[in-house]
Length: 233
Ligand SMILES: [Zn+2]
Image (cartoon, rainbow, N blue to C red; front, side, top):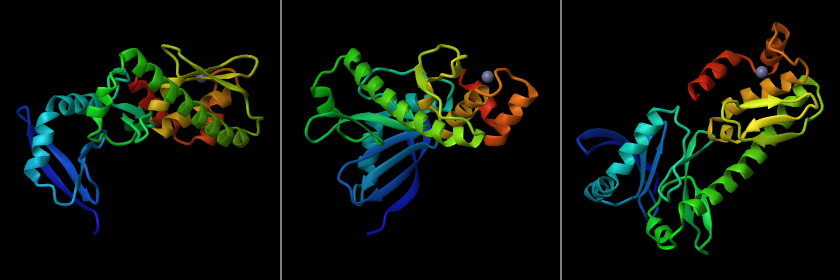
């Protein structure tokens, strides 16, 4: 049976919310909130009234998360079991795997009761999620550096993750690049801009015309990414 997708409207806390409903062969209702809005995945024959009652139960969470995605500047994380963790611009959530281990998954499924039952503290959630972010960041940043460095005909430089409050990236005179771990929350084209920018600094340690020409050679239309990045503060 093919997957069916339709647009639906729900009234949540006095607000009309449009969402995409995708029905497929699955057993539970899943919710996803991203810059594309609310997306619901449901089994083929679940009545709309049941889907609506699930939405009503989670109305507070849904309206809060939608507001956060509209205000994309907020990269602040909330260390709770039902929090959304952006990765490369897409929402991820914590879940329990069948064997009982914690995992990060793309959609928000009805697994939270089990997750709540294991009683994690916000400190434990933070440790787990931050470990995941760091692993994802290291893998992704390494791959992007390996992609862009050859385009500038420079050797692949070492890099480290930074926790800087105000900078996305930097590089030092020994040729080591630092990339802010938070970049991994943003869409890949923004990660690529920061990588291209820092790599270009390995040739030109300033923001001269020559420098921006180098950036443009490997990352055309960099101004768009640069402005978007400013929006994240
Ligand atoms: Zn710079």
